[in-house]
Image 1: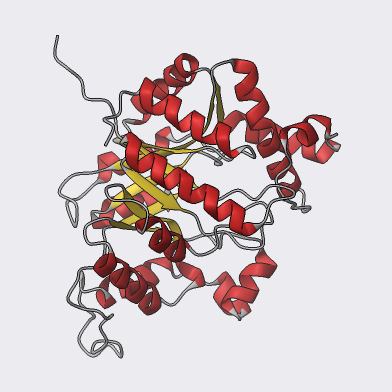
Image 2 (image 1 turned 180 degrees about the horizontal axis):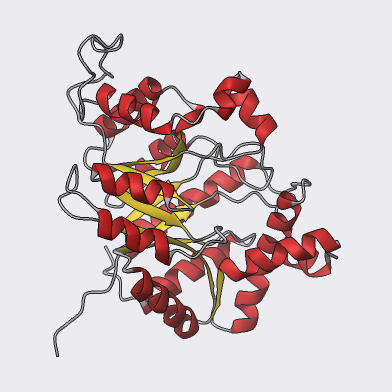
Length: 341
Protein backbone atom coordinates (compact mmCIF):
# COMPACT_ATOMS: atom_id res chain seq x y z
CA UNK A 1 0.00 0.00 0.00
CA UNK A 2 1.39 3.40 -0.99
CA UNK A 3 2.21 5.84 1.81
CA UNK A 4 -0.06 8.89 1.76
CA UNK A 5 1.63 11.97 3.20
CA UNK A 6 -0.66 13.75 5.68
CA UNK A 7 -1.92 17.20 4.78
CA UNK A 8 0.10 20.09 6.21
CA UNK A 9 -1.37 21.67 9.32
CA UNK A 10 -1.06 25.38 10.07
CA UNK A 11 -2.24 27.76 12.81
CA UNK A 12 -4.41 30.89 12.77
CA UNK A 13 -3.92 32.82 16.02
CA UNK A 14 -6.55 35.43 16.93
CA UNK A 15 -4.67 36.19 20.19
CA UNK A 16 -7.61 35.79 22.61
CA UNK A 17 -8.08 38.26 25.47
CA UNK A 18 -9.80 36.76 28.51
CA UNK A 19 -11.52 38.49 31.44
CA UNK A 20 -8.94 39.53 34.03
CA UNK A 21 -6.04 39.19 31.61
CA UNK A 22 -3.75 41.97 30.40
CA UNK A 23 -2.84 42.37 26.76
CA UNK A 24 0.79 41.66 27.70
CA UNK A 25 -0.28 38.27 29.08
CA UNK A 26 -2.29 37.51 25.95
CA UNK A 27 0.70 38.32 23.76
CA UNK A 28 3.01 36.20 25.92
CA UNK A 29 0.60 33.26 25.51
CA UNK A 30 0.58 33.88 21.77
CA UNK A 31 4.37 33.54 21.73
CA UNK A 32 4.04 30.25 23.64
CA UNK A 33 1.86 29.02 20.78
CA UNK A 34 4.39 30.24 18.21
CA UNK A 35 7.19 28.29 19.90
CA UNK A 36 5.01 25.20 20.17
CA UNK A 37 3.87 25.32 16.55
CA UNK A 38 7.48 25.76 15.44
CA UNK A 39 8.60 22.68 17.41
CA UNK A 40 5.65 20.46 16.48
CA UNK A 41 6.00 20.78 12.70
CA UNK A 42 3.13 23.12 11.84
CA UNK A 43 3.68 24.71 8.42
CA UNK A 44 2.46 28.29 8.98
CA UNK A 45 1.35 30.61 11.74
CA UNK A 46 -0.89 33.45 10.61
CA UNK A 47 -2.26 36.38 12.60
CA UNK A 48 -5.60 38.04 11.96
CA UNK A 49 -6.45 41.74 11.71
CA UNK A 50 -9.49 42.66 13.80
CA UNK A 51 -10.52 46.03 15.21
CA UNK A 52 -12.73 47.15 18.10
CA UNK A 53 -13.16 43.57 19.32
CA UNK A 54 -12.41 43.36 23.05
CA UNK A 55 -11.80 39.58 22.98
CA UNK A 56 -9.14 39.77 20.25
CA UNK A 57 -5.72 41.40 20.75
CA UNK A 58 -4.53 40.91 17.16
CA UNK A 59 -5.00 44.23 15.37
CA UNK A 60 -1.69 44.49 13.51
CA UNK A 61 -0.39 41.24 11.98
CA UNK A 62 3.00 42.64 10.97
CA UNK A 63 3.88 43.42 14.58
CA UNK A 64 2.87 39.91 15.65
CA UNK A 65 4.92 38.42 12.79
CA UNK A 66 8.00 40.40 13.80
CA UNK A 67 7.76 39.30 17.44
CA UNK A 68 7.07 35.65 16.57
CA UNK A 69 10.05 35.68 14.23
CA UNK A 70 12.28 36.36 17.22
CA UNK A 71 11.26 33.15 19.01
CA UNK A 72 10.91 30.72 16.07
CA UNK A 73 13.29 29.32 13.47
CA UNK A 74 11.30 27.31 10.94
CA UNK A 75 7.57 27.97 10.80
CA UNK A 76 6.27 30.39 8.15
CA UNK A 77 4.70 33.55 9.57
CA UNK A 78 2.02 35.60 7.91
CA UNK A 79 -1.14 37.66 7.95
CA UNK A 80 -4.48 35.96 7.99
CA UNK A 81 -4.95 38.55 6.83
CA UNK A 82 -4.25 42.18 6.10
CA UNK A 83 -7.64 43.76 5.40
CA UNK A 84 -6.44 45.60 2.31
CA UNK A 85 -9.27 48.20 2.08
CA UNK A 86 -8.15 49.53 5.48
CA UNK A 87 -4.67 50.34 4.19
CA UNK A 88 -2.65 52.02 1.48
CA UNK A 89 -1.35 49.34 -0.91
CA UNK A 90 2.06 51.06 -0.92
CA UNK A 91 2.30 50.89 2.85
CA UNK A 92 1.38 47.18 2.87
CA UNK A 93 4.01 46.45 0.20
CA UNK A 94 6.64 48.34 2.20
CA UNK A 95 5.77 46.59 5.46
CA UNK A 96 5.87 43.10 4.01
CA UNK A 97 9.01 43.65 1.97
CA UNK A 98 10.63 44.83 5.19
CA UNK A 99 9.40 41.68 6.94
CA UNK A 100 10.77 39.57 4.10
CA UNK A 101 14.19 41.18 4.61
CA UNK A 102 14.02 40.35 8.34
CA UNK A 103 12.72 36.78 7.92
CA UNK A 104 13.78 35.71 4.42
CA UNK A 105 11.69 32.93 2.95
CA UNK A 106 9.39 32.68 5.96
CA UNK A 107 6.74 35.37 5.39
CA UNK A 108 3.25 35.11 3.84
CA UNK A 109 1.01 38.03 2.88
CA UNK A 110 -2.63 37.01 3.24
CA UNK A 111 -5.12 39.62 2.04
CA UNK A 112 -8.81 40.08 2.78
CA UNK A 113 -11.33 42.55 1.38
CA UNK A 114 -13.57 42.83 4.47
CA UNK A 115 -12.94 45.52 7.11
CA UNK A 116 -12.39 43.07 9.96
CA UNK A 117 -14.74 45.12 12.11
CA UNK A 118 -18.09 46.94 12.24
CA UNK A 119 -19.05 49.74 9.78
CA UNK A 120 -18.44 52.60 12.25
CA UNK A 121 -14.95 51.36 13.08
CA UNK A 122 -14.29 50.86 9.37
CA UNK A 123 -15.13 54.54 8.87
CA UNK A 124 -12.66 55.46 11.63
CA UNK A 125 -10.00 53.39 9.86
CA UNK A 126 -10.64 54.61 6.32
CA UNK A 127 -11.59 58.22 7.17
CA UNK A 128 -14.27 58.67 4.51
CA UNK A 129 -17.65 57.17 3.74
CA UNK A 130 -16.64 56.84 0.09
CA UNK A 131 -13.72 54.62 1.08
CA UNK A 132 -15.92 52.48 3.33
CA UNK A 133 -18.35 51.69 0.52
CA UNK A 134 -15.87 51.58 -2.38
CA UNK A 135 -15.74 48.23 -4.19
CA UNK A 136 -12.20 48.54 -5.54
CA UNK A 137 -10.38 45.52 -4.12
CA UNK A 138 -9.03 44.34 -7.53
CA UNK A 139 -7.61 47.82 -8.15
CA UNK A 140 -5.97 47.91 -4.73
CA UNK A 141 -4.56 44.43 -5.24
CA UNK A 142 -3.15 45.41 -8.62
CA UNK A 143 -1.44 48.45 -7.08
CA UNK A 144 -0.01 46.34 -4.27
CA UNK A 145 1.46 43.82 -6.70
CA UNK A 146 2.89 46.59 -8.87
CA UNK A 147 4.44 48.41 -5.90
CA UNK A 148 5.96 45.08 -4.87
CA UNK A 149 7.47 44.42 -8.30
CA UNK A 150 5.22 41.48 -9.25
CA UNK A 151 3.29 43.49 -11.86
CA UNK A 152 3.85 46.61 -13.94
CA UNK A 153 1.79 49.77 -13.77
CA UNK A 154 0.30 50.74 -17.16
CA UNK A 155 2.26 53.28 -19.16
CA UNK A 156 1.47 56.78 -17.92
CA UNK A 157 0.09 55.62 -14.56
CA UNK A 158 0.78 58.27 -11.87
CA UNK A 159 2.41 55.63 -9.60
CA UNK A 160 4.62 54.10 -12.31
CA UNK A 161 7.79 55.51 -10.79
CA UNK A 162 7.04 54.37 -7.23
CA UNK A 163 8.53 51.17 -5.80
CA UNK A 164 8.06 49.80 -2.31
CA UNK A 165 11.30 49.81 -0.39
CA UNK A 166 13.42 47.89 0.36
CA UNK A 167 13.39 46.72 -3.27
CA UNK A 168 16.20 44.17 -3.04
CA UNK A 169 13.81 41.56 -1.60
CA UNK A 170 10.63 40.20 -3.18
CA UNK A 171 7.13 40.76 -1.92
CA UNK A 172 6.22 37.63 0.10
CA UNK A 173 3.82 35.12 -1.46
CA UNK A 174 0.34 36.63 -1.70
CA UNK A 175 -2.73 34.67 -0.58
CA UNK A 176 -6.33 35.80 -1.04
CA UNK A 177 -8.65 35.06 1.87
CA UNK A 178 -12.41 34.83 1.79
CA UNK A 179 -15.63 33.38 3.16
CA UNK A 180 -17.43 33.30 -0.20
CA UNK A 181 -16.54 32.56 -3.81
CA UNK A 182 -15.40 36.12 -4.67
CA UNK A 183 -11.78 35.72 -3.55
CA UNK A 184 -11.73 32.12 -4.79
CA UNK A 185 -12.46 33.26 -8.34
CA UNK A 186 -10.01 36.17 -8.16
CA UNK A 187 -7.21 34.03 -6.71
CA UNK A 188 -7.76 31.45 -9.46
CA UNK A 189 -7.76 34.11 -12.16
CA UNK A 190 -4.40 35.62 -11.14
CA UNK A 191 -2.69 32.41 -9.99
CA UNK A 192 -2.35 32.98 -6.25
CA UNK A 193 -3.05 30.83 -3.23
CA UNK A 194 -6.51 30.85 -1.63
CA UNK A 195 -7.67 30.35 1.97
CA UNK A 196 -11.32 29.81 2.89
CA UNK A 197 -12.48 31.03 6.32
CA UNK A 198 -14.62 28.07 7.34
CA UNK A 199 -13.81 28.83 10.98
CA UNK A 200 -16.59 31.44 10.97
CA UNK A 201 -18.32 31.37 7.60
CA UNK A 202 -21.90 30.06 7.52
CA UNK A 203 -21.39 29.12 3.87
CA UNK A 204 -20.21 25.67 2.85
CA UNK A 205 -16.52 25.68 1.86
CA UNK A 206 -16.98 23.13 -0.93
CA UNK A 207 -18.23 25.50 -3.64
CA UNK A 208 -15.50 28.16 -3.35
CA UNK A 209 -12.70 25.63 -2.75
CA UNK A 210 -13.61 23.50 -5.76
CA UNK A 211 -14.28 26.52 -7.97
CA UNK A 212 -10.82 27.87 -7.16
CA UNK A 213 -9.20 24.62 -8.24
CA UNK A 214 -11.29 24.27 -11.41
CA UNK A 215 -10.69 27.86 -12.57
CA UNK A 216 -7.03 28.15 -11.58
CA UNK A 217 -4.62 29.64 -14.11
CA UNK A 218 -0.88 29.41 -13.39
CA UNK A 219 0.54 32.73 -12.20
CA UNK A 220 2.78 33.31 -9.21
CA UNK A 221 1.91 29.70 -8.32
CA UNK A 222 2.32 27.00 -10.98
CA UNK A 223 -0.56 24.99 -9.48
CA UNK A 224 -3.45 25.74 -7.11
CA UNK A 225 -2.97 25.67 -3.35
CA UNK A 226 -6.09 25.94 -1.23
CA UNK A 227 -6.06 26.28 2.57
CA UNK A 228 -9.13 25.39 4.62
CA UNK A 229 -9.30 27.32 7.92
CA UNK A 230 -11.24 25.52 10.67
CA UNK A 231 -12.31 26.20 14.25
CA UNK A 232 -11.18 23.20 16.31
CA UNK A 233 -11.31 22.28 19.99
CA UNK A 234 -9.52 19.02 20.73
CA UNK A 235 -9.11 17.41 24.14
CA UNK A 236 -8.68 13.93 25.68
CA UNK A 237 -12.45 13.75 26.35
CA UNK A 238 -15.47 15.18 24.61
CA UNK A 239 -16.54 16.90 27.83
CA UNK A 240 -13.23 18.76 28.10
CA UNK A 241 -13.42 19.82 24.46
CA UNK A 242 -16.99 21.06 24.86
CA UNK A 243 -16.03 23.11 27.92
CA UNK A 244 -13.12 24.69 26.03
CA UNK A 245 -15.48 25.79 23.24
CA UNK A 246 -18.18 27.42 25.42
CA UNK A 247 -16.40 30.79 25.98
CA UNK A 248 -16.05 31.20 22.21
CA UNK A 249 -19.78 30.70 21.74
CA UNK A 250 -20.51 33.42 24.28
CA UNK A 251 -17.96 35.84 22.81
CA UNK A 252 -19.20 35.51 19.25
CA UNK A 253 -22.87 35.56 20.25
CA UNK A 254 -22.28 38.86 22.04
CA UNK A 255 -20.27 40.20 19.10
CA UNK A 256 -22.97 39.28 16.58
CA UNK A 257 -25.65 40.98 18.69
CA UNK A 258 -23.71 44.23 19.14
CA UNK A 259 -22.39 43.70 22.68
CA UNK A 260 -18.74 42.65 22.28
CA UNK A 261 -16.79 41.84 25.43
CA UNK A 262 -13.72 40.01 26.69
CA UNK A 263 -13.62 36.23 26.48
CA UNK A 264 -15.12 34.65 29.60
CA UNK A 265 -13.39 31.84 31.44
CA UNK A 266 -15.03 28.41 31.43
CA UNK A 267 -16.90 28.87 34.72
CA UNK A 268 -18.28 32.27 33.68
CA UNK A 269 -19.27 30.94 30.27
CA UNK A 270 -21.11 27.94 31.73
CA UNK A 271 -23.17 30.28 33.90
CA UNK A 272 -23.97 32.69 31.06
CA UNK A 273 -27.62 32.94 30.00
CA UNK A 274 -28.10 33.64 26.30
CA UNK A 275 -30.73 36.13 25.17
CA UNK A 276 -33.05 34.89 22.39
CA UNK A 277 -31.03 36.83 19.80
CA UNK A 278 -27.76 35.43 21.14
CA UNK A 279 -29.16 31.90 21.17
CA UNK A 280 -30.04 32.27 17.50
CA UNK A 281 -26.53 33.53 16.70
CA UNK A 282 -24.98 30.63 18.59
CA UNK A 283 -26.54 28.07 16.25
CA UNK A 284 -24.55 29.32 13.29
CA UNK A 285 -21.35 29.63 15.27
CA UNK A 286 -21.68 26.16 16.75
CA UNK A 287 -22.13 24.63 13.29
CA UNK A 288 -18.69 25.93 12.29
CA UNK A 289 -16.92 24.38 15.30
CA UNK A 290 -15.22 20.99 15.32
CA UNK A 291 -15.21 19.71 18.90
CA UNK A 292 -14.14 16.41 20.45
CA UNK A 293 -11.45 13.85 21.05
CA UNK A 294 -8.53 13.46 18.62
CA UNK A 295 -10.18 10.55 16.83
CA UNK A 296 -13.52 12.33 16.43
CA UNK A 297 -11.92 15.61 15.37
CA UNK A 298 -9.67 13.95 12.82
CA UNK A 299 -12.57 12.08 11.24
CA UNK A 300 -14.53 15.29 10.70
CA UNK A 301 -11.50 17.22 9.45
CA UNK A 302 -10.55 14.41 7.04
CA UNK A 303 -14.09 14.41 5.65
CA UNK A 304 -14.01 18.18 5.05
CA UNK A 305 -10.54 17.99 3.51
CA UNK A 306 -11.67 15.25 1.13
CA UNK A 307 -14.85 17.06 0.08
CA UNK A 308 -13.07 20.38 -0.51
CA UNK A 309 -9.83 18.95 -1.98
CA UNK A 310 -7.90 21.09 0.51
CA UNK A 311 -4.13 21.21 0.11
CA UNK A 312 -3.59 22.40 3.67
CA UNK A 313 -5.55 22.83 6.90
CA UNK A 314 -5.29 25.92 9.11
CA UNK A 315 -6.52 25.48 12.66
CA UNK A 316 -7.74 28.18 15.01
CA UNK A 317 -8.53 27.35 18.63
CA UNK A 318 -10.00 30.47 20.19
CA UNK A 319 -9.93 29.33 23.81
CA UNK A 320 -9.83 31.14 27.13
CA UNK A 321 -7.50 28.62 28.77
CA UNK A 322 -4.03 28.91 27.22
CA UNK A 323 -2.85 25.55 28.56
CA UNK A 324 -5.80 23.72 27.04
CA UNK A 325 -5.35 25.61 23.79
CA UNK A 326 -1.73 24.48 23.55
CA UNK A 327 -2.74 20.92 24.43
CA UNK A 328 -5.31 20.95 21.62
CA UNK A 329 -2.60 21.80 19.09
CA UNK A 330 -0.34 19.10 20.56
CA UNK A 331 -3.05 16.47 20.21
CA UNK A 332 -3.75 17.49 16.61
CA UNK A 333 -0.04 17.37 15.71
CA UNK A 334 0.25 13.85 17.12
CA UNK A 335 -3.01 12.65 15.53
CA UNK A 336 -2.10 13.97 12.07
CA UNK A 337 1.48 12.70 12.30
CA UNK A 338 3.35 15.98 11.97
CA UNK A 339 7.13 15.81 11.87
CA UNK A 340 8.50 17.44 14.99
CA UNK A 341 11.24 19.94 14.32
